[in-house]
Length: 184
Image (cartoon, rainbow, N blue to C red; front, top):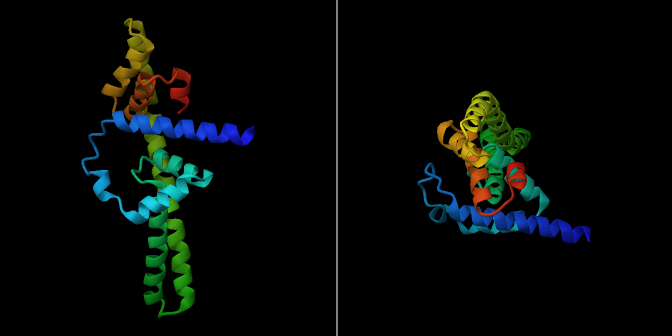
């Protein structure tokens, strides 16, 4: 029963993500994602997407507002390990210990970068909360519905708060209840 509930919730979340991807109009991304994908990243993404670890990595990348798939992120880690090991091997007089130190540093570098980006985005979001609350309260006082006030926020305020409210609105427009959309 527990396994069924977990699989059901994960598949429901994946279905919502697929439906949202059809309606998202991301002006920032002018590069065609299909032309950018490769066989290796697609294969890794399919394998990683089935695991809870891949789901957690995808969530962390989304929180950092990085446009990577989980498979691309894992390939980036492998490349950083190889490059870090190779560079420190040359700089460390071609000693295997220096290569190992560089490889370990390369393994942790992408994770450190993602955490840093998450903190920066969260700080920006927190700085915009007072403006968001003012705009929401003024909209509700003017007679807007909650959804109309959230739409005003998604249009008037800068990123990252407008991105989050735009996503909530899009989820609500495809039929997801407001509580679930706000949780997402």
